[in-house]
Image (cartoon, rainbow, N blue to C red; front, side, top):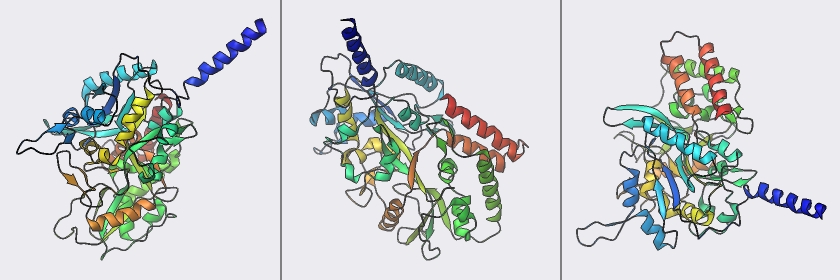
Length: 448
């Protein structure tokens, strides 16, 4: 009898140990008195300055009746589709001490196996602009390193749910971007938006054939247009040149201190050289739905796009937002209903996505931005899409992406490092600046 009881207890313990990592067939709990909590953190790094809470109340414009404009709320839309009727949307403060206190309390709640059912987040960090006093600051996201959340069993595996999805069209979500949310446990995060740091040239001045074998150092030894794309690349997306940046299984950097020093040194040298040579007109920024052109450099020009290649070869995308389901949710089916809808064409063209795409990034669904009817929201009731000449080149560039990493708080460290090394007044040798930054980044990964 004792042996029988021992076997039963062992089986029970094994069952309990395994249940946290596998919610695949767990149904939603109809008896729960708590609402479905959806955490939405998309304002702090956005170029849209209106309230996301208001956008979700005025989520979808309804057919007009005369001059009266009416809207359906996000809850109305989900209810109409047959989804949960008790959604509680949660919006954290954008910046400052209120945000810090809010995030500390939320992380404590998550560590206690509680927290929101669904996370909808900008990734890593963002530049928060204060319109009142015209100042800005970097602000960290809830998950500064989304890959670590994936490794630490904080998120529900979604593969079984995706197979039964009602709204998303999985085969139209760019595979190389979606792979960023996957590890050996399955698909844990769904990237919503991404970008690539690129330089735009006029094709009659610059011709370039995308080459997946090219490296960042190869760009520096190339013609002026390649050196300009590498040496003047987007300051807030420098990790693209250093990919792979981190080892998230080991919680440490994947780039060595010597490689980081070489990167800073070579970029500074390139920046100085570019002052002495003729470089074709260009603009260096990130891929986004619409870019600014002047009269001489407009939508009628054929374009050449040159991405920033990485130290290991090929060029990568940066996932800038994502959604994921809390592994401790009591309502996985309802949470996935929302997640499924948020990856649909309708949702990716909605006001919510404008906070993640406007002037910064692209939605993951292929075909969007191709023209009228396929535009993405301008955060009001209009839409923006790429000009034909830009869309054609964008598709060609998208097909050659080698891999994707989530944007993380390491970007700020790289930004600060290069800013101080190139333009700062501390007087510290570049070797010292690199060493201090390298140690700090490793510590961030180890302690987060």
